[in-house]
Image 1 (cartoon, helix red, strand yellow):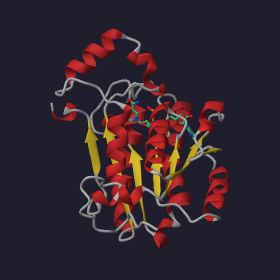
Image 2 (image 1 turned 135 degrees about the vertical axis):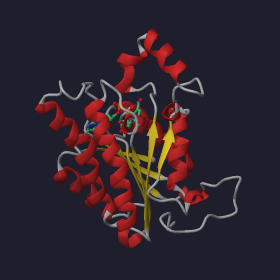
Image 3 (image 1 turned 90 degrees about the vertical axis):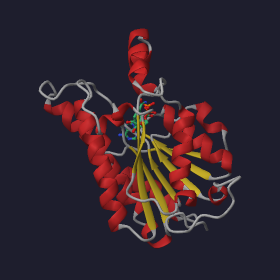
Length: 257
Ligand SMILES: NC(=O)c1ccc[n+]([C@@H]2O[C@H](COP(=O)([O-])OP(=O)(O)OC[C@H]3O[C@@H](n4cnc5c(N)ncnc54)[C@H](O)[C@@H]3O)[C@@H](O)[C@H]2O)c1
């Protein structure tokens, strides 16, 4: 068993993720754009992956025998517990990646209560539930948790206000958990800028948005699935063995300007 939570990295610089090869990894939002990329990425290393999502399982999702597809809703603790019981009957989880999310664009004043509560229950409370249900057994076993935040949790974005508030809270929850769950569990987050995905297809279908966004980013590009998979692999593996409570900005410098 790899203890990714508290283990100094090896000197294997050519393949720093060797310790992820025989791990078990759970990805929430596993049938979303970034979730799918993460599932495939970890499976390609040899990890056994559990893909959890509220969306229906599609036949094309089933094709990789390394990826177990499960339906569950992060708003429903019982549905998470059912998956956890299955995992508990195996050798247990080494890595938890919270990659589910919902975006309903609104400013603060115009956000009605239903929208606020729905977004909070998925984007924030869903991570809280997932960490409690899947992360708790890691406190004995050791492991690594990576939460997907957003640059919107750091910068104020007019129409991304409720989502941004929840993503800011994810960064703080990451710090709280990192302290409380040390020394066996490391907890980190990433804060990406815009990436073409299910969540952003309306934005990326607008050439004006793409141009304006790209020009606003010092590195002059938006994110890719591969950017996310590499960063999450780093934070999940012992290559980042001394890193905990950190939110890694993945915004091409956007939040600096
Ligand atoms: N795409 C971006 O520009 C971007 C930028 C920063 C952060 N993020 C974050 O990255 C993560 C992945 O998003 P994405 O871009 O792949 O979007 P996506 O819409 O393609 O994927 C989100 C997935 O979450 C699932 N989901 C939503 N509510 C759920 C629930 N209650 N229970 C279980 N699953 C649920 C959806 O079914 C979907 O498959 C999210 O946390 C998102 O906030 C995305």
